Image 1: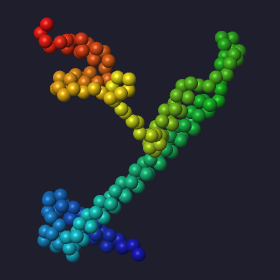
Image 2: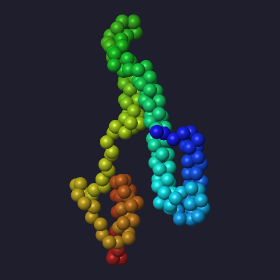
Image 3: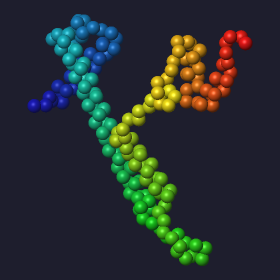
Image 4: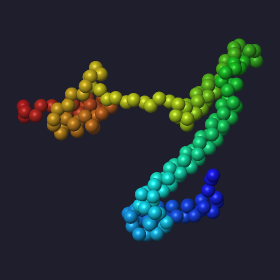
Length: 175
């Protein structure tokens, strides 16, 4: 049987005071925490965990509501543009004669953007895996010198910078 409103209010008030004390660094076995009505330090610790889980569940529910609203908005926008993106429309010449039927490519682009947004919103896309590799996809040859590491960090991903930087490095033998 669920707790009454009054009991839930008391629990919430006690938990709020417990969180305030914990934020101040007060330990679970401190008399101030036990004075809140906890029988043991372990009971207070469990209540913190319950409170955090409860808040996490509330946030998850709020996120679910937000996600549902955004999906409904995307549905409306998609519905508004879908016909133009999928049904060929007549194309007329200067005299007003129909010369072809084509779909609206701008509408297609809009549909793709809406679909991409929906995939991101709902976590449908696979995570992107990025990998840095050396010549021909092999390992990156690293020496043990700081200048080599600095060179790699400053030129990472920029072939032009790497080319001009390596031209300026030259030999260090003084010749």
